[in-house]
Image (tube, rainbow, N blue to C red):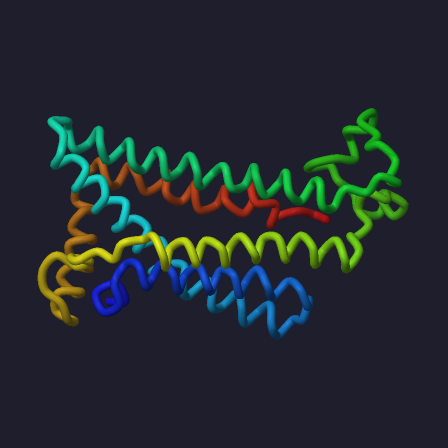
Length: 218
């Protein structure tokens, strides 16, 4: 409904601004501010991802019309390129955080005690571990400011260079059309191939927080 009313481009710009607000909330470390940012991020994430998917689908469809190639191949190519750059943002983010938060005075990590790492991590045995000391406010603000600046730069790039789609929703509008799309999504469950994709979807949703280090004993 949001894409129908405002278009893919506007939803992408707004979603990125909400993400920037979520990033910026870490500047102050206030419970109420960070919780508010998390709620807004959660509400905006669904339309944001839907707009991303629709925009890539539209680009692939237009590109396929200029070539004599299989549509499935073109679609896989476009989404593969998108996921390549999307996943590489985590690599770039880790590199930035490493160099910004790097403390030259910290002792090297003791790799001879693997029993205290990973799943075997024991907080009570790491009270004197300087690697767990929080960064200074300057380092934290510098890191968050870098991420925030990149997010705002992406908003500026989208506003200037991203073309709005003329047919964000190809046919129909209103609650009846939305309901029909909702019902058609459930009809997909009648297909065994779709059912086999469900466990994979659940797994991907669960692995995200672990890869993003949101689930940790620290």
